Amino acid sequence: MMPPPAPAGGSGAAHVPLALRLRYHAQRLGVAGWSGIGAAVAACALLLFAEVNTRPVLERERVQAAQAALDEQRQRLRPAAAAAEGPAEFVARLPAPSALPEVIEFLHDQAAKRGLQIERGDYRLSREIGGLAQRHQVTLPIRGEYPRLQAWLRLALAKHPFLAIDDLSVRRAADDASLIESRVQLSIYTRNAP
Image (cartoon, rainbow, N blue to C red):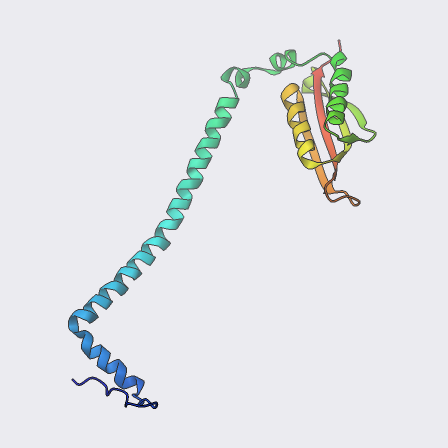
């Protein structure tokens, strides 16, 4: 087979139809060249098929590993003795009702130290755990920076393990984008008054 004609000298090049050029290059490849192209296409197809089929398996394994780690952390945080104790043993570890003013003062002091402004709060009492314990609900409207609110909540929960967050709503302050207005509802559990 002859190669396509070379462009004629000078400024104008001879036009060789695309079909003739493709046929020329296809014949130059020969059987070995076409076999190589076929093998490369087959390898790409197999690689794509393997990637598509193994991605869900890898994702499922990643989720299962994360779930196992979470379960392990839960078991570590919940001692077997605490899981087996009854209501009376649980209530015995709660503070006396006389500790309530001290806890509320701690919440207000720590908020002020972090630059958080607490508006007038709402305080309610309800009985829980078969009449053995008291649940004091405190609702506090708080204004300040979000990282400071997070730090305040972490400290409160770490210092007072008988404290629980019931509800937390957060929205940006209308007058300052760096501040938030939040409503924090806490439950403080104490032993029942004698």
